[in-house]
Figure 1 (cartoon, one colour):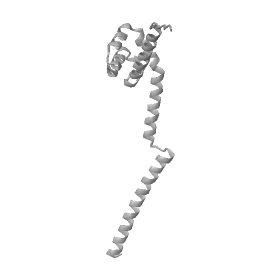
Figure 2 (cartoon, one colour):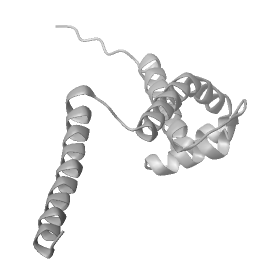
Figure 3 (tube, helix red, strand yellow):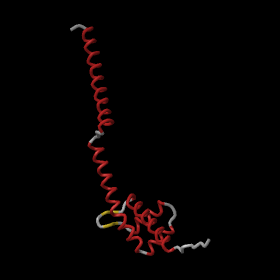
Figure 4 (tube, helix red, strand yellow):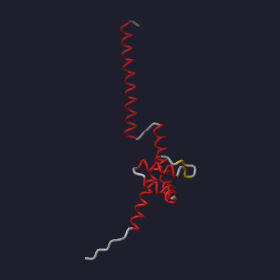
Length: 133
């Protein structure tokens, strides 16, 4: 094989390699976009997030009830301003529910539920206005 043939072969191999890589990337994009394919790591992360969201959804009412039962913690919760402060109060008042540690996501859902219950209770106890026309 002379020098010119080696250069032509090298060029063909380079073009072939680039074509294989581009084809693989193209198929990866098609599989991901059109068919919903994802890597095992991404699938595991999405599954973990979904499971955690469901666990938080189930545990939030228990967390809210426990916080509402403690008048001192409830007073701290009402005094706290802003979501971050309220989440911190929840995490300090209810550090664990069973074996589950109350993290930021769960404390956020718990705080939202406590706020909703407090608003609901305030509406029930508010005097109804009667208007005569």
